[in-house]
Image (tube, rainbow, N blue to C red):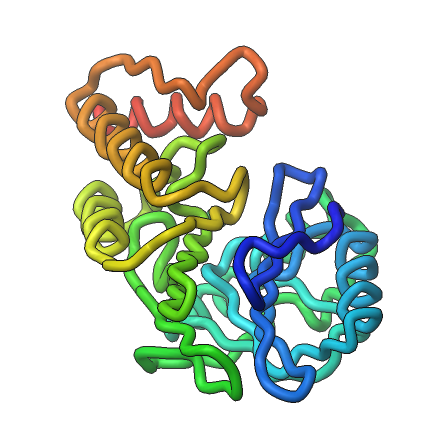
Length: 257
Ligand SMILES: [Zn+2]
């Protein structure tokens, strides 16, 4: 885990060597902090807990952007803060529990599996906590109940698995309307006013212009792939992980069918 870096006053981001997965910390009152998607290896979580302790911070609330295995992690050292996610995300984390745990065993062994995926459903416009306003933007598309967090005080959009510079749009192809859901998600994120920086779940923090670029790139990807066209997305390269190339092939096949 890279060390926590301040991206705006009171907002810290650490980036794991594993899939450039980000963890976001928002500093609240009296040493409390909000933790978004703490990830991803056992060592990453240990380093995160250590660094929070060194900074005199303790998690008082947490948010999982969506119910995929790399966004629902926790460790004893992070304490017993309430961990929230959108209702649809919590339901899926429950029904998909076995498959989430299997991914964890395979990909990042050693986690306390009892703590994985244990979020409580929060159906609210913002995360209830003693700190800067953390507005929720919940939609489907990548996963049911995907919830980005917008921090209006400093214009930070914590985007979960949307708006990445290293990952193509990954659709929830078991949904009734994967394309419509994803487009709605992009529109919702595009309509948030006052974004100054975007923090993707995987990849680099970008400024407002970079967010626009990613939104346009994602829309172009959806247009091409849903029309059954091959598409040279700059995020698909010879160095892209095999799983992403195969997800891309699956998505192309899905729309051709
Ligand atoms: Zn995901």
